[in-house]
Image 1 (tube, rainbow over the protein chains, first blue to last red):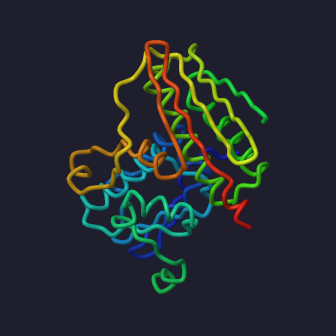
Image 2: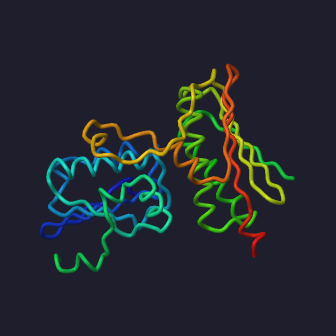
Length: 111
Length: 143
């Protein structure tokens, strides 16, 4: 069984980072943060939450590392396949201002 | 009234055990799916707080979680074995640009609890801290 937390997919100027853990929480935060390097960013970087069933505040803190790296590199960061509950949470903490959602079909033109 | 008791060591991996219990019990009493998600997140935050700030991550210290189910609500009491904590700040916290730049990315947990449950309170002393969360089954009674 693979222990990878993020599976990376790239095409053109786009990097899609598929989050593979179902829980973005205290236990997975360190591994997630470790992948949020400046070199991981592309002009369009997308975090894919399709596999994510749970996010807590420790997870939000880890995800904010991607926001910081995107800002430092001047690249755009988006979220994809975010559940309605997680959209609500992102809105509550105003994370969605820094990581707006994007639809998978919007990436088709980059492939 | 029915009670379910879960005791975990102060290791964050066991927070997932409490969260799974919250999931089962939330569904068992008929909370709507979105309220079950609210419950799981609020319980997760309270348990992680008890582990990190109450018990100072001393694995030998337990976090006791009591789920009390009755006709109109689910009450969750989260008790640590620490020596008390200072005032708990439940005020709204948002991602702010200046905090991003300074690396201050934490502190959303208590705000999320306050926003996601119907009632909450905290009592703290040198014998430990107890956080109580309540979610009412009002959606059911309104049907």
